[in-house]
Picture 1: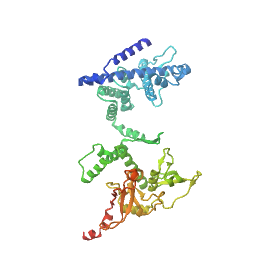
Picture 2: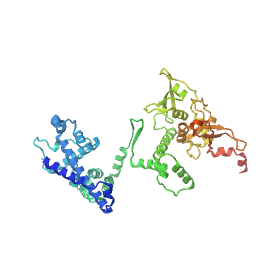
Picture 3: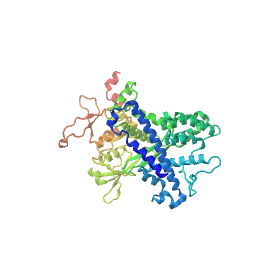
Picture 4: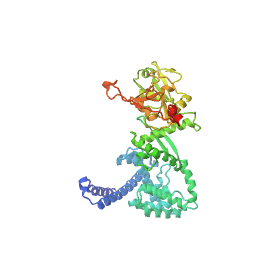
Length: 501
């Protein structure tokens, strides 16, 4: 039996190896034949996936825990059937596990069909039957109403992913949605399966279940809501990945915010008002990728929201993060720092930017390794000063930026540590996080100057670009004007105009 099975698989492999596999051989192929070949190749893959899963399931049966060290996997030096399948197929651990799980499912369904109403089943000469297989935790056996899915999978008409989609989408029988009703639903979905991929097939199965069981919609809605979660995963390279599983109601809110932040970069609506059109153009012209822009937008919303309403958080106010850095490094401007709880180092320009915001607390370390309690007491801009800055600047003062005051950070024009900058309103300016990063990390400087005779009264703020030539670092740079966005301030600086109105 083994020899004939191996021979059959080898013959199929030889036939596939003879199929065209170069660009030159495909270039003159008619469109219809190309699409037909793609469809046939997919059918072959479905058959192979089913066969591999069956073989993997049989490996699992012969490696049942009850056999201990005499099991197939154990005799070949593997701890589990998953490991044997992974090594034999050269696949990933996840793919091997999926193949074993699918094979166990198919073998179990076959045994249930062979047993019939009277029980029994298939067993080998050691008395080891399919019942000895242990389904993975959280993976129930294929129910009776879904047995009609097994044959299409075995002959390659239905993929294993499609089987799981139908099974999951239709759910469990109830008093109103009986086993017979679900069998009929399976037949209806099989008739459509050839034109639907697994994702669309799952949605179709779910929609069909809702049509059959309208009274259960609220219960399934509650189940989806209870599955919501947010997890953070720290990666070895110092980055952190957020995994956010959203129920439909929550997803609608998050999706709306995401679309508003990124739609101009993704071909969003163009028939908008004059103000929105200008904002959309600025988003399109932004140098950040849509993903980076969305990340920065959500982070700004989180910081602003935590500062506005901390009722669901332990502690109050905006996030407070501790930055660990040696006093010598901060004084000299050379070296690195770290954020408490993170592993990746930070550059000193980034530390200077963080210390401007008031949401980061520096912990200075002396040369002896002891924390130092140093620094001027007014490193952070006070709430009253922030109110004054918001009234004066009207939001981020960078040219063309329209971030409101609640989305900004207060920047010390003269760095607080290296230049002993004062925490005064006159020496502060509001910048959004993106432009605050730009100033500190890209070598920009901001200066304050008095108005010239030909200008309205009041201080002026300018951004000085970084030198373009390291050999001429003192070369004159054309400054970028940073006008206030505060309309009341502009009116106050033009009293003659106000009186004339």
